[in-house]
Image (tube, rainbow, N blue to C red):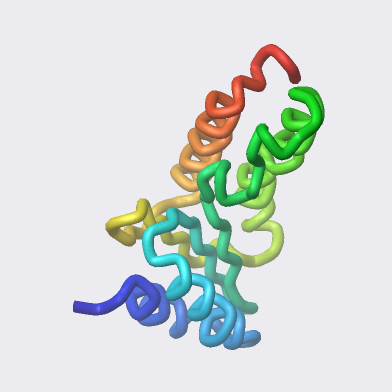
Length: 136
């Protein structure tokens, strides 16, 4: 059975004309180091972009480390919305030929609209996790 990275490589490599190291070096290291973390992977002629859908705890946002609740929410706000912003930028930076989604178990090919839906759901999850609705 192929690893998740091997599956990504098999699908993406034929598309890339320049900047193969995006896939062969950086994506390989990242994906193999984080085998259960969800991600969106975008491929175009000029390389790849990997967008991690990390749980909030992976950002190091531990409430107990902040002097007050406001500072905690302010820090969390810096990442909420970043995934959807990056996903919406992908067509403009020529990363639209192949879009892959790894849900933590299975890799599948999706379209731009589905990638945006996944990123929006991820953003909602983060917002719910830190109860930001009352603070934004």
